[in-house]
Length: 377
Image (cartoon, rainbow, N blue to C red):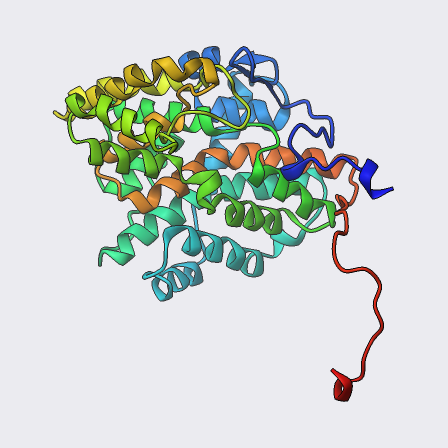
């Protein structure tokens, strides 16, 4: 009987649920949120609009967007005890500190224990504003500075850069951060979103699911690509070295970071929007060489595109963060900042027709055997 069981390791290719949020066509390299092309959203929308779209199902009108933005702005506050917890953990990795702080919020804020869709939306909006505050506060505290107070006049993305760096970002820099958040906001049943759904399936609350998602994202196989790309760029050093670097990697059967994706066989549709951002920000920051190195790697990898090794969104993200002077260990937390709306709506969808997610494993251990008393072993 067991010989007839097909094992899909990693649940690859398995559909476990229906979802009305994001549609991914890996063969054609297409992505949409709620029916809207990622290209339209990345070029014409804002993170606040996209977050509303993901959570509520439609783009907001002016009044709805103003109310939504006001709720996000009002939620830019943390209990004093969270800053004490961050200080106590300041030597830890930012993802560990972020996960710990979100878990503490579940204990410190009574509303976190509420269930139901409206409670999930309320708690989700609050966490969407609090998570950037936690990451920025940790960066300040571990460097001996006081956390920067949020600016209510700034957008979500611009306020993030303000809290992180203590200086108002340029319009282009703020817009690029906004686009980065939009591109990372939702991506179907990825590892962290699936993990969050598993948690909700047990009838746990939203904070518990977000802690699960953060724990899953922290693994380098899911969230570590942007950091690895930056390390690769530093190793290559100059555009002239890119071809030899790629040739050596391919000869040794080693992966070239930033190419290939579990879902996409064509180029990741999100990548083009980050590519132009790297070029413009590099010129603004007086460091165009990073973009030139990336493009030299892309050129060297063209012969392998037919094997599905096309550039993905994380290929460009790391260099953008580097140009801002952001430490590498913050790259994954930034991913989490953008992904918050996606996690929230995945949890809401799971709760609507909840079912315990409990797949099977096929036993391949020892055959039945007798138990021997300790003296006889």
